[in-house]
Image (cartoon, rainbow over all chains, first blue to last red; front, side):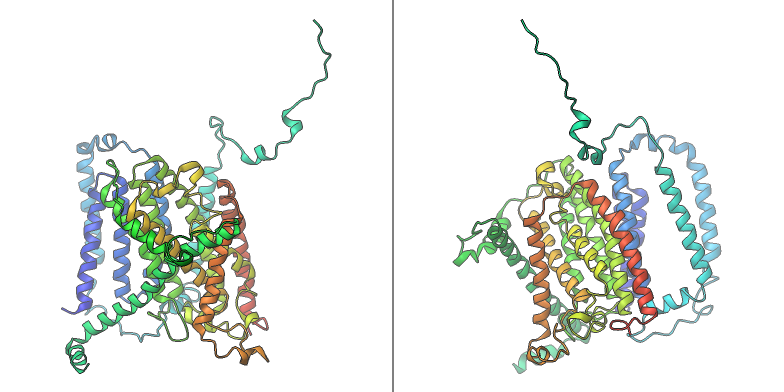
Length: 200
Length: 351
């Protein structure tokens, strides 16, 4: 077994172990942390496949940004595990059915009949100065320009929709506006009254 | 001597590379750690003088041994783990902060040929690693199971995510201008003296990068994650002894990293500022590139301390407004400007 293969099996083991921890841990924060580990392990596998741009971007985007926000929300939420677990037996048959359907689909699409060295020849090794990033960029902005732009527009719509959802007014919440507080003038708060001194 | 050489040659080739790489890593990490130790000393001295005090002056001549004394003290202190804390995560958190801060040095070019891993995607690698550092802070805050620590972690997470975007966009400007993600190539693209460095054509991005760097390292005036006056010490309030020291090491290692990166990305790294100038150029030719790099890094290190001694802490909503509503638009506009300048080969920098 070559060293590369050894690293691949270690990473694959970490990936599968952490992925199964994601769905078996009771504590949602632990699940999220194992998901991060799974991302890191799969990024390592991509590095082995000489896809350094994708590997680093996976860490940068998913580990560095998306999962931070995920954890942020998970830690703030007060999740009641009891209500989550209630009715588990009732939905179990449906869940098993869904799982079987998904596994069947996966086997059908990425099963051994569609892959293997006889279907796709092993790609040639590139020299050390081969820039994955530059190649990806030149293909993305020429051949796949349209799909790239469409994906960008869909993301933009999603951003606008997300902002639109949070812009709603909530009259029941009372919060301070620090800008207004700082900008307050004396005349807004204090009213000088002239009155006669009372005698007696 | 021959005996050692024969032992060395008897080792398998893979093991030789492994040992060799490990030695190189030690050669980078050990000086960085020493710099961190004396950076804390410099901080206390400089802020001391700025506040008309003398700073530490008891241990050793002029207080030079103070960092060593501090390190020894922290090492021998008891590590207290709160009863209701999550033990594993509580202990992993400090290493998660320190690890990325040290690992980022792997792609850092110290001069023309001195770099541990000369990879093509160097800038991306650094960006990814600095973004991973936030996990230590979040996990520390959550695992401590304390309200103050948790509030500090939440503040820090929100702040780092906000400023990371501005920082990333500033780096996009640099890579468009240099046409490469390799840090060595970025420096080589700035050849030609003080006014050819990227700080001038990328001035707005330079400012955004430096300020985001201060925010990213949770330093004053952006140190709301610690916020002594309202949340005691923020995310590391429950840490003691060596675990606390590791957080501290990581913070200072990050400061040195950000300073060194600013020098490489915007101030021409190891290049001489007088390169190609009539009289001054040949006069300073003998100075090794590494010295220029250290001087530029020290300049920004000093700026971090100067900022801390000068500015009061930002208000939280103002931090968020600065990050999202001021920096990100500035960087996006300037990326477009740089893109046009590169496409039309604007003279002096991009021709």
